[in-house]
Length: 313
Image 1 (cartoon, rainbow, N blue to C red):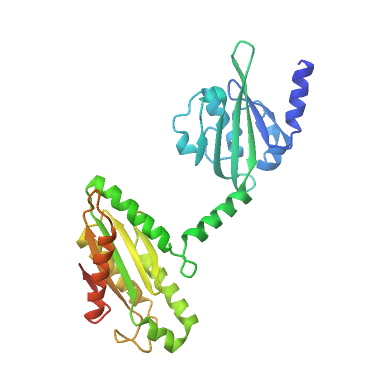
Image 2: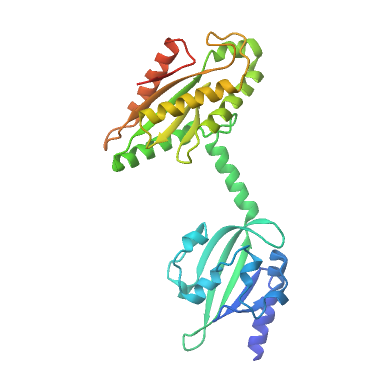
């Protein structure tokens, strides 16, 4: 080993940044102290092997450095939540991902760099992978995103997210020529409930109703949001009117099942909801606002006909 090679090896081994080095056959030749601390895996377990993956994952899968060694990035989007490959593996790769560390049990968000090392003839001789723990920053970003997208009282999506979702789905379904259904849901006689029991009880009532709505709208593609005050909304992409009516009736039943006593309702002894349902086949160049207007008209009819019911436009 040359003096320069020995120096480089010692430098990487004692680097404060977690790092390891693979040779051209994906065998570990350096596993530094910092990556030992990060993963809980000692160097003695991985040096000279290609089993470095088990320090990061429960099942066999390539690390970023392995992709650089192989020169293949097919399927990288399935391995990492974010990645960059601007100039191919010859210039290295960057990725970010949540990782559940098998040895320590810690859930970490790591940024990962994998850079190739070539000899004078341009032949790959090693790949250096470095890792940076961004967990604290990522959690802060996610918390800010939740604050920006969630209704503070109920935990449902807020009006901004609702409007963005309807707009996006309207344009998508206009291309796909598929229906879009929209439900407006109003808690019956809610002002009377607040007047009788107070605003704290009113807030708890809205949280309970929101939870019932979230459980009744079950498809991942659907969205439930707080529309404003005691009104909620549901967006059902690709759902026709009969399907939307089924969901609306399921919502009404789910709220009744909560059995929240209402001391001054004209619709029943417990808290109930009125629901307006509208369905459109979106057209290019037209606005989604007519869909919401139709659901609002149907909701008005449900209230006029006695509440605790579903009406469609």
